[in-house]
Image (cartoon, rainbow, N blue to C red; front, side, top):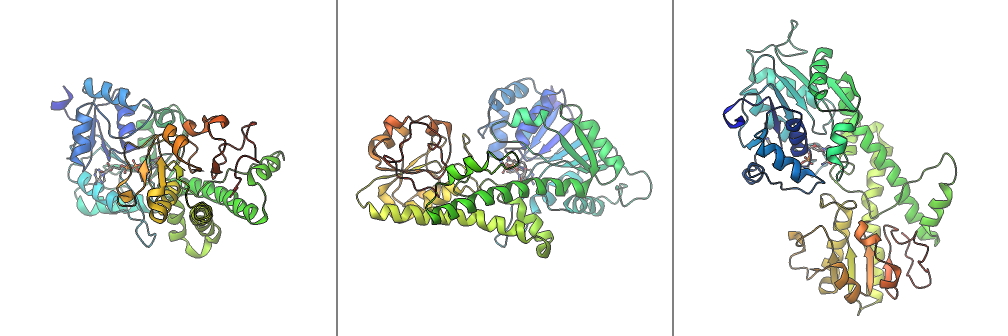
Length: 431
Ligand SMILES: NC(=O)c1ccc[n+]([C@@H]2O[C@H](COP(=O)([O-])OP(=O)(O)OC[C@H]3O[C@@H](n4cnc5c(N)ncnc54)[C@H](O)[C@@H]3O)[C@@H](O)[C@H]2O)c1
Protein backbone atom coordinates (compact mmCIF):
# COMPACT_ATOMS: atom_id res chain seq x y z
CA UNK A 1 0.00 0.00 0.00
CA UNK A 2 1.25 3.47 -0.90
CA UNK A 3 0.34 4.68 2.59
CA UNK A 4 3.37 2.83 3.97
CA UNK A 5 5.70 3.47 1.03
CA UNK A 6 7.88 6.37 0.01
CA UNK A 7 6.22 8.34 -2.79
CA UNK A 8 7.98 8.74 -6.15
CA UNK A 9 6.68 12.26 -6.63
CA UNK A 10 5.62 14.95 -4.21
CA UNK A 11 3.35 17.74 -5.56
CA UNK A 12 3.22 20.83 -3.35
CA UNK A 13 0.04 22.87 -3.65
CA UNK A 14 -3.17 21.02 -4.53
CA UNK A 15 -5.20 23.74 -6.23
CA UNK A 16 -6.38 24.19 -9.81
CA UNK A 17 -2.95 23.21 -11.15
CA UNK A 18 -1.43 20.99 -8.47
CA UNK A 19 -4.33 18.59 -7.97
CA UNK A 20 -4.88 17.73 -11.66
CA UNK A 21 -1.10 17.46 -12.08
CA UNK A 22 -0.80 15.11 -9.09
CA UNK A 23 -3.68 12.99 -10.40
CA UNK A 24 -2.28 12.77 -13.94
CA UNK A 25 1.18 11.79 -12.64
CA UNK A 26 -0.44 9.16 -10.39
CA UNK A 27 -2.37 7.80 -13.37
CA UNK A 28 0.92 7.39 -15.24
CA UNK A 29 2.04 4.89 -12.61
CA UNK A 30 4.00 7.03 -10.12
CA UNK A 31 3.17 6.95 -6.44
CA UNK A 32 2.24 10.54 -5.64
CA UNK A 33 2.03 12.43 -2.38
CA UNK A 34 0.05 15.65 -2.69
CA UNK A 35 0.97 18.26 -0.09
CA UNK A 36 -1.11 21.25 0.87
CA UNK A 37 -0.99 23.60 3.85
CA UNK A 38 -4.80 23.53 3.92
CA UNK A 39 -5.85 20.53 6.04
CA UNK A 40 -9.40 20.70 4.66
CA UNK A 41 -8.06 20.22 1.12
CA UNK A 42 -5.94 17.27 2.29
CA UNK A 43 -8.90 15.58 4.01
CA UNK A 44 -11.13 16.07 0.97
CA UNK A 45 -8.60 14.47 -1.38
CA UNK A 46 -7.91 11.57 0.98
CA UNK A 47 -11.65 10.82 0.85
CA UNK A 48 -11.27 10.58 -2.94
CA UNK A 49 -13.17 13.84 -3.40
CA UNK A 50 -12.20 17.18 -4.91
CA UNK A 51 -12.60 20.78 -3.76
CA UNK A 52 -12.44 22.47 -7.18
CA UNK A 53 -14.56 22.28 -10.32
CA UNK A 54 -12.77 20.76 -13.31
CA UNK A 55 -14.07 18.50 -16.07
CA UNK A 56 -13.48 14.77 -15.31
CA UNK A 57 -11.21 15.51 -12.35
CA UNK A 58 -13.58 13.96 -9.78
CA UNK A 59 -13.49 10.52 -11.40
CA UNK A 60 -9.74 10.62 -11.93
CA UNK A 61 -8.95 11.61 -8.33
CA UNK A 62 -11.42 9.09 -6.96
CA UNK A 63 -9.74 6.36 -9.04
CA UNK A 64 -6.09 7.13 -8.18
CA UNK A 65 -6.90 7.61 -4.48
CA UNK A 66 -8.81 4.30 -4.44
CA UNK A 67 -5.84 2.55 -6.10
CA UNK A 68 -3.54 4.11 -3.47
CA UNK A 69 -1.51 5.91 -6.14
CA UNK A 70 -2.36 9.33 -4.70
CA UNK A 71 -2.69 10.43 -1.13
CA UNK A 72 -2.48 13.84 0.47
CA UNK A 73 -0.77 15.26 3.52
CA UNK A 74 0.10 18.58 5.10
CA UNK A 75 3.71 17.40 5.45
CA UNK A 76 6.35 16.91 2.73
CA UNK A 77 7.98 13.46 2.71
CA UNK A 78 11.17 12.15 1.06
CA UNK A 79 10.56 11.61 -2.63
CA UNK A 80 12.50 11.51 -5.92
CA UNK A 81 10.78 14.43 -7.67
CA UNK A 82 9.21 17.52 -6.09
CA UNK A 83 6.78 19.62 -8.13
CA UNK A 84 5.89 23.06 -6.75
CA UNK A 85 2.45 24.41 -7.79
CA UNK A 86 1.72 26.98 -5.08
CA UNK A 87 0.24 30.46 -5.63
CA UNK A 88 2.33 33.37 -6.93
CA UNK A 89 0.08 36.41 -6.42
CA UNK A 90 1.10 40.04 -6.47
CA UNK A 91 0.89 42.28 -3.43
CA UNK A 92 -1.03 45.56 -3.13
CA UNK A 93 1.77 47.39 -4.96
CA UNK A 94 1.54 44.83 -7.78
CA UNK A 95 4.91 43.39 -6.84
CA UNK A 96 5.23 39.63 -7.24
CA UNK A 97 4.92 37.66 -4.02
CA UNK A 98 7.06 34.52 -4.24
CA UNK A 99 6.87 33.78 -0.51
CA UNK A 100 4.68 30.67 -1.11
CA UNK A 101 7.30 29.29 -3.51
CA UNK A 102 10.14 29.93 -1.07
CA UNK A 103 8.12 28.41 1.77
CA UNK A 104 7.48 25.28 -0.35
CA UNK A 105 11.20 25.12 -1.24
CA UNK A 106 12.08 25.37 2.47
CA UNK A 107 9.89 22.37 3.28
CA UNK A 108 11.48 20.40 0.42
CA UNK A 109 14.99 21.25 1.60
CA UNK A 110 14.33 19.40 4.86
CA UNK A 111 13.84 16.04 3.08
CA UNK A 112 16.00 16.54 -0.04
CA UNK A 113 18.59 13.87 -0.87
CA UNK A 114 21.16 13.30 -3.57
CA UNK A 115 19.59 12.35 -6.92
CA UNK A 116 16.35 14.30 -6.37
CA UNK A 117 14.77 16.75 -8.83
CA UNK A 118 12.87 19.93 -7.92
CA UNK A 119 10.58 21.42 -10.56
CA UNK A 120 8.86 24.78 -10.14
CA UNK A 121 5.58 25.02 -12.08
CA UNK A 122 4.12 28.14 -10.45
CA UNK A 123 4.03 31.14 -12.79
CA UNK A 124 7.02 33.09 -11.56
CA UNK A 125 8.97 36.29 -12.15
CA UNK A 126 12.22 35.79 -14.04
CA UNK A 127 14.92 34.69 -11.61
CA UNK A 128 12.63 32.81 -9.17
CA UNK A 129 14.11 29.40 -9.98
CA UNK A 130 17.55 30.86 -9.25
CA UNK A 131 16.20 32.07 -5.90
CA UNK A 132 14.87 28.58 -5.14
CA UNK A 133 18.31 27.21 -6.00
CA UNK A 134 20.04 29.76 -3.74
CA UNK A 135 17.67 28.97 -0.86
CA UNK A 136 18.26 25.22 -1.21
CA UNK A 137 22.02 25.86 -1.32
CA UNK A 138 21.80 27.86 1.90
CA UNK A 139 19.61 25.34 3.71
CA UNK A 140 21.48 22.26 2.51
CA UNK A 141 25.22 23.05 2.40
CA UNK A 142 25.85 19.27 2.45
CA UNK A 143 24.47 18.91 -1.12
CA UNK A 144 26.17 19.98 -4.36
CA UNK A 145 23.75 22.42 -6.01
CA UNK A 146 23.54 23.03 -9.79
CA UNK A 147 25.04 26.25 -11.07
CA UNK A 148 26.92 26.72 -7.81
CA UNK A 149 29.02 23.59 -7.40
CA UNK A 150 31.65 23.20 -10.13
CA UNK A 151 31.39 19.42 -9.95
CA UNK A 152 28.43 17.27 -10.94
CA UNK A 153 25.57 18.47 -8.72
CA UNK A 154 23.67 16.16 -6.36
CA UNK A 155 20.23 17.54 -7.23
CA UNK A 156 18.50 18.99 -10.29
CA UNK A 157 16.38 22.14 -10.32
CA UNK A 158 14.18 23.19 -13.25
CA UNK A 159 11.29 25.44 -14.19
CA UNK A 160 8.36 24.13 -16.23
CA UNK A 161 5.36 26.45 -16.58
CA UNK A 162 1.78 25.35 -16.96
CA UNK A 163 -0.32 26.64 -19.85
CA UNK A 164 -3.60 24.79 -19.33
CA UNK A 165 -7.08 26.15 -19.93
CA UNK A 166 -9.53 25.77 -17.04
CA UNK A 167 -12.25 23.36 -18.15
CA UNK A 168 -9.75 21.41 -20.30
CA UNK A 169 -6.98 20.98 -17.76
CA UNK A 170 -6.70 17.18 -17.86
CA UNK A 171 -6.56 17.07 -21.63
CA UNK A 172 -4.13 19.98 -21.94
CA UNK A 173 -1.87 18.75 -19.13
CA UNK A 174 -1.00 15.74 -21.23
CA UNK A 175 -1.32 17.08 -24.77
CA UNK A 176 0.14 20.60 -24.65
CA UNK A 177 3.76 21.25 -25.56
CA UNK A 178 5.92 22.20 -22.57
CA UNK A 179 8.97 24.42 -22.11
CA UNK A 180 11.38 22.90 -19.62
CA UNK A 181 14.04 25.26 -18.35
CA UNK A 182 16.92 23.86 -16.34
CA UNK A 183 19.27 25.75 -14.07
CA UNK A 184 21.79 23.81 -16.17
CA UNK A 185 21.25 21.70 -19.33
CA UNK A 186 21.70 18.61 -17.17
CA UNK A 187 18.82 19.77 -14.91
CA UNK A 188 16.63 20.29 -17.98
CA UNK A 189 17.38 16.77 -19.22
CA UNK A 190 16.51 15.32 -15.81
CA UNK A 191 13.17 17.17 -15.73
CA UNK A 192 12.50 16.16 -19.34
CA UNK A 193 12.77 12.48 -18.41
CA UNK A 194 10.13 13.06 -15.73
CA UNK A 195 7.66 14.87 -18.00
CA UNK A 196 8.04 12.26 -20.74
CA UNK A 197 6.23 9.85 -18.40
CA UNK A 198 2.90 11.63 -18.71
CA UNK A 199 3.15 14.39 -21.37
CA UNK A 200 2.29 13.52 -24.97
CA UNK A 201 2.96 17.05 -26.27
CA UNK A 202 6.45 18.08 -27.33
CA UNK A 203 8.78 18.94 -24.43
CA UNK A 204 11.35 21.56 -25.39
CA UNK A 205 14.31 22.16 -23.13
CA UNK A 206 15.80 25.58 -22.46
CA UNK A 207 17.28 27.53 -19.56
CA UNK A 208 15.20 28.37 -16.48
CA UNK A 209 15.06 32.14 -17.03
CA UNK A 210 13.85 31.77 -20.63
CA UNK A 211 11.18 29.30 -19.53
CA UNK A 212 10.03 31.70 -16.78
CA UNK A 213 9.79 34.58 -19.26
CA UNK A 214 8.03 32.41 -21.86
CA UNK A 215 5.08 31.89 -19.55
CA UNK A 216 4.83 35.59 -18.68
CA UNK A 217 5.10 36.57 -22.34
CA UNK A 218 2.30 34.21 -23.35
CA UNK A 219 -0.08 35.86 -20.91
CA UNK A 220 1.07 39.40 -21.70
CA UNK A 221 0.46 38.67 -25.40
CA UNK A 222 -3.13 37.68 -24.62
CA UNK A 223 -3.58 40.69 -22.35
CA UNK A 224 -2.33 43.21 -24.93
CA UNK A 225 -4.59 41.75 -27.62
CA UNK A 226 -7.65 41.73 -25.37
CA UNK A 227 -6.84 45.32 -24.36
CA UNK A 228 -7.02 46.29 -28.02
CA UNK A 229 -10.53 44.81 -28.26
CA UNK A 230 -11.61 46.42 -24.99
CA UNK A 231 -10.26 49.82 -26.02
CA UNK A 232 -12.05 49.44 -29.33
CA UNK A 233 -15.32 48.73 -27.52
CA UNK A 234 -15.01 51.99 -25.56
CA UNK A 235 -14.09 53.93 -28.71
CA UNK A 236 -17.08 52.40 -30.53
CA UNK A 237 -19.29 53.25 -27.60
CA UNK A 238 -18.15 56.87 -27.72
CA UNK A 239 -18.81 57.03 -31.47
CA UNK A 240 -22.16 55.25 -31.26
CA UNK A 241 -20.91 52.25 -33.21
CA UNK A 242 -21.67 48.57 -32.66
CA UNK A 243 -18.28 47.12 -31.77
CA UNK A 244 -19.34 43.54 -32.52
CA UNK A 245 -20.25 44.51 -36.05
CA UNK A 246 -17.00 46.43 -36.56
CA UNK A 247 -14.88 43.52 -35.30
CA UNK A 248 -16.83 40.99 -37.33
CA UNK A 249 -16.20 42.97 -40.50
CA UNK A 250 -12.56 43.81 -39.73
CA UNK A 251 -11.84 40.12 -39.11
CA UNK A 252 -12.78 39.38 -42.72
CA UNK A 253 -9.33 40.80 -43.54
CA UNK A 254 -7.09 37.76 -44.07
CA UNK A 255 -4.43 39.00 -41.64
CA UNK A 256 -6.62 40.59 -38.96
CA UNK A 257 -7.96 38.69 -35.98
CA UNK A 258 -9.34 41.04 -33.32
CA UNK A 259 -10.39 39.34 -30.10
CA UNK A 260 -13.76 39.87 -28.40
CA UNK A 261 -14.27 42.62 -25.81
CA UNK A 262 -15.74 41.94 -22.38
CA UNK A 263 -15.94 43.51 -18.93
CA UNK A 264 -12.14 43.37 -18.55
CA UNK A 265 -9.65 40.56 -18.07
CA UNK A 266 -9.83 38.16 -15.17
CA UNK A 267 -8.38 35.07 -13.64
CA UNK A 268 -5.15 35.03 -11.74
CA UNK A 269 -2.97 34.49 -14.80
CA UNK A 270 -3.57 37.02 -17.60
CA UNK A 271 -4.64 39.73 -15.14
CA UNK A 272 -1.59 39.17 -12.93
CA UNK A 273 1.39 37.84 -14.85
CA UNK A 274 2.03 40.88 -17.10
CA UNK A 275 2.78 42.86 -13.92
CA UNK A 276 5.69 40.46 -13.31
CA UNK A 277 7.23 41.68 -16.57
CA UNK A 278 6.50 45.33 -15.73
CA UNK A 279 8.08 44.81 -12.32
CA UNK A 280 11.18 43.25 -13.89
CA UNK A 281 11.65 45.93 -16.57
CA UNK A 282 9.48 48.96 -15.68
CA UNK A 283 11.05 51.39 -18.15
CA UNK A 284 10.99 48.95 -21.06
CA UNK A 285 7.35 47.81 -20.81
CA UNK A 286 4.98 50.79 -21.41
CA UNK A 287 2.74 48.80 -23.78
CA UNK A 288 2.30 45.90 -21.37
CA UNK A 289 1.57 48.28 -18.49
CA UNK A 290 -0.94 50.27 -20.56
CA UNK A 291 -2.73 47.10 -21.68
CA UNK A 292 -3.15 46.10 -18.05
CA UNK A 293 -4.59 49.51 -17.21
CA UNK A 294 -6.93 49.46 -20.23
CA UNK A 295 -8.28 46.05 -19.26
CA UNK A 296 -8.70 47.04 -15.61
CA UNK A 297 -10.36 50.30 -16.69
CA UNK A 298 -12.89 48.45 -18.83
CA UNK A 299 -14.72 47.18 -15.74
CA UNK A 300 -15.07 50.77 -14.50
CA UNK A 301 -16.44 51.78 -17.89
CA UNK A 302 -19.04 49.00 -17.72
CA UNK A 303 -19.98 50.01 -14.16
CA UNK A 304 -20.50 53.62 -15.29
CA UNK A 305 -22.54 52.61 -18.35
CA UNK A 306 -24.69 50.18 -16.42
CA UNK A 307 -25.22 52.61 -13.53
CA UNK A 308 -26.48 55.32 -15.88
CA UNK A 309 -28.98 52.89 -17.40
CA UNK A 310 -30.12 51.57 -14.04
CA UNK A 311 -30.64 55.09 -12.70
CA UNK A 312 -32.78 55.87 -15.75
CA UNK A 313 -35.08 52.93 -14.93
CA UNK A 314 -35.71 53.38 -11.19
CA UNK A 315 -38.35 50.66 -10.89
CA UNK A 316 -36.52 47.97 -12.80
CA UNK A 317 -34.98 44.80 -11.29
CA UNK A 318 -31.46 44.28 -12.67
CA UNK A 319 -29.99 40.87 -13.52
CA UNK A 320 -26.18 40.63 -13.55
CA UNK A 321 -25.42 37.52 -15.55
CA UNK A 322 -22.28 35.78 -14.36
CA UNK A 323 -19.48 36.23 -11.83
CA UNK A 324 -16.81 33.89 -13.21
CA UNK A 325 -13.74 35.29 -14.93
CA UNK A 326 -14.57 33.29 -18.05
CA UNK A 327 -17.23 31.04 -19.49
CA UNK A 328 -18.33 27.74 -17.99
CA UNK A 329 -16.09 27.67 -14.92
CA UNK A 330 -16.59 28.35 -11.21
CA UNK A 331 -13.43 30.43 -10.77
CA UNK A 332 -14.19 33.99 -9.62
CA UNK A 333 -10.60 35.09 -8.92
CA UNK A 334 -9.72 38.55 -10.28
CA UNK A 335 -13.01 38.38 -12.16
CA UNK A 336 -14.10 41.66 -13.77
CA UNK A 337 -17.66 40.26 -13.96
CA UNK A 338 -17.62 39.88 -10.19
CA UNK A 339 -16.15 43.36 -9.79
CA UNK A 340 -18.96 44.88 -11.89
CA UNK A 341 -21.72 42.85 -10.22
CA UNK A 342 -20.39 43.69 -6.76
CA UNK A 343 -20.19 47.42 -7.43
CA UNK A 344 -23.69 47.47 -8.93
CA UNK A 345 -24.92 45.52 -5.89
CA UNK A 346 -23.35 48.09 -3.59
CA UNK A 347 -24.92 50.94 -5.54
CA UNK A 348 -28.35 49.49 -6.25
CA UNK A 349 -28.68 46.87 -3.47
CA UNK A 350 -32.01 45.08 -3.38
CA UNK A 351 -32.76 45.88 -7.03
CA UNK A 352 -29.89 43.63 -8.12
CA UNK A 353 -30.13 39.91 -8.83
CA UNK A 354 -27.06 37.80 -9.60
CA UNK A 355 -27.42 34.89 -11.99
CA UNK A 356 -24.45 32.51 -11.74
CA UNK A 357 -25.11 28.82 -12.45
CA UNK A 358 -21.62 28.01 -11.11
CA UNK A 359 -22.25 29.45 -7.63
CA UNK A 360 -24.23 27.72 -4.87
CA UNK A 361 -24.22 30.96 -2.90
CA UNK A 362 -23.00 34.50 -3.39
CA UNK A 363 -19.37 35.27 -2.45
CA UNK A 364 -19.00 36.77 1.03
CA UNK A 365 -18.40 40.30 -0.31
CA UNK A 366 -22.02 40.46 -1.46
CA UNK A 367 -23.32 40.11 2.12
CA UNK A 368 -25.26 43.18 3.23
CA UNK A 369 -25.48 44.59 -0.32
CA UNK A 370 -29.05 43.36 -0.63
CA UNK A 371 -28.29 41.55 -3.91
CA UNK A 372 -29.66 38.00 -4.25
CA UNK A 373 -28.57 34.94 -6.21
CA UNK A 374 -31.33 33.60 -8.45
CA UNK A 375 -31.54 31.09 -11.29
CA UNK A 376 -32.01 31.83 -14.99
CA UNK A 377 -35.74 31.15 -15.01
CA UNK A 378 -36.38 33.49 -12.07
CA UNK A 379 -34.25 36.15 -13.78
CA UNK A 380 -36.29 35.91 -16.96
CA UNK A 381 -39.40 36.34 -14.85
CA UNK A 382 -38.22 39.09 -12.45
CA UNK A 383 -35.59 41.20 -14.22
CA UNK A 384 -36.37 44.06 -16.56
CA UNK A 385 -32.72 44.58 -17.44
CA UNK A 386 -30.09 41.91 -18.12
CA UNK A 387 -26.38 42.68 -18.11
CA UNK A 388 -24.34 39.87 -19.69
CA UNK A 389 -21.00 39.76 -17.89
CA UNK A 390 -19.94 36.17 -18.64
CA UNK A 391 -20.50 34.13 -21.80
CA UNK A 392 -21.62 30.94 -20.07
CA UNK A 393 -23.22 28.48 -22.51
CA UNK A 394 -26.31 28.45 -20.28
CA UNK A 395 -26.78 32.18 -20.97
CA UNK A 396 -26.08 31.90 -24.68
CA UNK A 397 -28.76 29.24 -24.95
CA UNK A 398 -31.56 31.54 -23.75
CA UNK A 399 -33.74 32.02 -26.84
CA UNK A 400 -34.78 35.46 -27.94
CA UNK A 401 -38.41 34.62 -27.31
CA UNK A 402 -37.65 34.40 -23.58
CA UNK A 403 -35.88 37.74 -23.37
CA UNK A 404 -37.81 40.05 -25.62
CA UNK A 405 -38.98 43.18 -23.83
CA UNK A 406 -35.88 43.07 -21.64
CA UNK A 407 -33.34 45.83 -21.70
CA UNK A 408 -30.02 44.13 -22.47
CA UNK A 409 -26.56 45.47 -21.84
CA UNK A 410 -24.70 42.82 -23.77
CA UNK A 411 -21.19 43.37 -22.39
CA UNK A 412 -20.06 40.00 -23.74
CA UNK A 413 -21.85 40.20 -27.06
CA UNK A 414 -23.34 36.76 -26.44
CA UNK A 415 -26.67 37.49 -28.05
CA UNK A 416 -25.35 39.65 -30.83
CA UNK A 417 -24.60 36.81 -33.25
CA UNK A 418 -28.02 35.24 -32.98
CA UNK A 419 -29.76 35.96 -36.26
CA UNK A 420 -33.07 36.45 -34.48
CA UNK A 421 -31.83 39.30 -32.27
CA UNK A 422 -33.72 42.41 -33.13
CA UNK A 423 -31.86 45.60 -32.30
CA UNK A 424 -35.17 47.40 -32.04
CA UNK A 425 -36.31 45.16 -29.22
CA UNK A 426 -32.94 45.07 -27.48
CA UNK A 427 -31.18 47.94 -25.91
CA UNK A 428 -27.83 47.97 -27.65
CA UNK A 429 -25.33 49.38 -25.28
CA UNK A 430 -22.39 47.99 -27.14
CA UNK A 431 -19.44 48.83 -24.90
N1 LIG B 1 -5.19 28.01 -12.46
C1 LIG B 1 -4.66 28.14 -13.67
O1 LIG B 1 -5.37 28.08 -14.67
C2 LIG B 1 -3.18 28.31 -13.86
C3 LIG B 1 -2.64 28.18 -15.14
C4 LIG B 1 -1.27 28.29 -15.32
C5 LIG B 1 -0.46 28.58 -14.23
N2 LIG B 1 -0.99 28.73 -12.98
C6 LIG B 1 -0.09 29.00 -11.88
O2 LIG B 1 0.01 27.85 -11.06
C7 LIG B 1 0.25 28.23 -9.71
C8 LIG B 1 -0.81 27.61 -8.82
O3 LIG B 1 -2.06 28.13 -9.21
P1 LIG B 1 -3.44 27.45 -8.77
O4 LIG B 1 -4.48 28.03 -9.63
O5 LIG B 1 -3.30 25.97 -8.71
O6 LIG B 1 -3.55 28.04 -7.26
P2 LIG B 1 -4.59 27.59 -6.14
O7 LIG B 1 -4.73 28.74 -5.24
O8 LIG B 1 -5.79 26.96 -6.76
O9 LIG B 1 -3.84 26.42 -5.35
C9 LIG B 1 -2.65 26.60 -4.67
C10 LIG B 1 -2.63 25.67 -3.46
O10 LIG B 1 -1.34 25.77 -2.87
C11 LIG B 1 -1.51 25.64 -1.45
N3 LIG B 1 -0.31 26.13 -0.80
C12 LIG B 1 0.07 27.40 -0.52
N4 LIG B 1 1.29 27.42 0.04
C13 LIG B 1 1.71 26.14 0.11
C14 LIG B 1 2.90 25.52 0.59
N5 LIG B 1 3.93 26.23 1.08
N6 LIG B 1 2.99 24.17 0.54
C15 LIG B 1 1.97 23.43 0.04
N7 LIG B 1 0.83 23.97 -0.42
C16 LIG B 1 0.70 25.30 -0.40
C17 LIG B 1 -2.79 26.40 -1.17
O11 LIG B 1 -3.36 26.01 0.06
C18 LIG B 1 -3.64 26.03 -2.38
O12 LIG B 1 -4.47 24.89 -2.11
C19 LIG B 1 0.24 29.76 -9.69
O13 LIG B 1 1.56 30.22 -9.82
C20 LIG B 1 -0.54 30.09 -10.94
O14 LIG B 1 -0.22 31.37 -11.42
C21 LIG B 1 -2.32 28.60 -12.78
